[in-house]
Length: 535
Image (cartoon, rainbow, N blue to C red; front, side, top):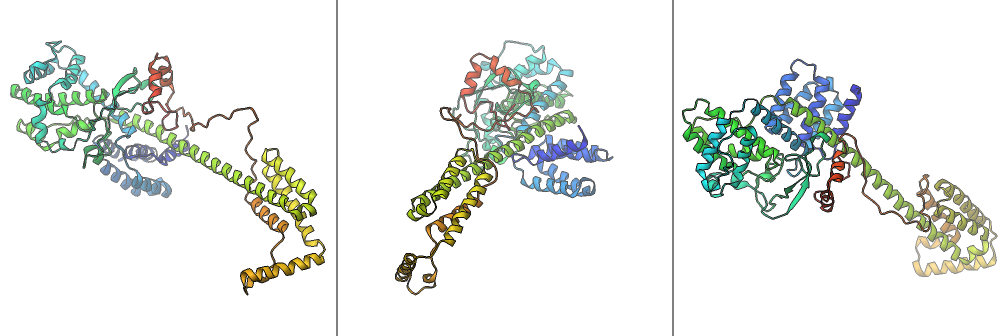
């Protein structure tokens, strides 16, 4: 693909009406990389933005992006810089959406796991298992007494949800952060998804990134919670708000730390456990990254680790280039679809307005012709013209006459009527009627200047109005009529396929007996066919 096409595609995506902060950072950096990537200092800038994006320091990232734009306006072009400045000021985030961020975090969780697998130490999780059992032995998941594989370690991490809430209540009570949790307790049932991790069921996805269809809980934000975490941190994808189970992990880690105080690698061990915890929760779709990490950043929780001289790295790694790049492709795909969808919707709206206007004009013309036919004098003086107008109107109404043909022929007939009206002889009866009309106006209006204005005849008045209506008719053809006996199909929402994401998921759903039917019955889980939601 040529450079010009790549740039045009990115500029189009940046015009998306549904662009959020994550999308903007990903797309603007991709555009800047195309234009400024050869600059010596750009790799350092890119690394900084990737780190800020990972840690969701979006405001800092946006400031740095705009600063770079202004410094390189000559290379980027004034129009590009102005577009980025304008869009940066407009973009907002919705915790219930954040699609590109969700996609990125699932990739990031995979990366964390791949790092842990390389140098996996079973003994770490043996010790964690012992601490887990000591905290709440009646809830022990001892199907294994020794951790032998990475999968078993991951299973241990996920089993923490079985711990009794009493384990974590003490820490929660002392945590200012947890008081902001705004997950609704309303039972909403379950929905189906073929998307991994925290990616929403109806979000677009690449064909090679789907998973077997499974059921997940439907969870909503508690809108009544004042100052709630998810409502005040809109850039954080809402999955289940702040992770309460992470407090259970902290309780178990306290036990682990007490038993391994002499371990010289204790800090690294704790950070590896936190890393696996974070990645597992994202991959399982339990929580987004910040919903977990912000628990560890709570001042009270930080003090617990500080007392043991442990500095948490919050599952932050240096190299996130691949995840960032793939998220850029994803963001461009969904943004381009949103632009196309908006365009299609606007076209449909414009078409609907034109058709409605056409209907109104047809109705108006029909009413005027009806009035003309009901006027005895017009029927007497212009029978041929009225017949021609009636025939012309019928042909136009059923679509056999195009708009421009109807306009031209109707205008000619109206001109004939006006000419005849102006040239008709002035009879004594006309004179009497004129005097009579004058005194009628005088009685009605009094001595007003309008009393001297002679009203036009019915024929002149109607043909003038008809000409005014003709001026509003566009030259495009009228819509095709549906033949009698043929049922008109029910109007459907605009549908469009964009091949940025292959439609493999639809094939998977078709092959799943009963499951796809259930999926389609739930309007909240259906994989929509709209441009912004089509796979």
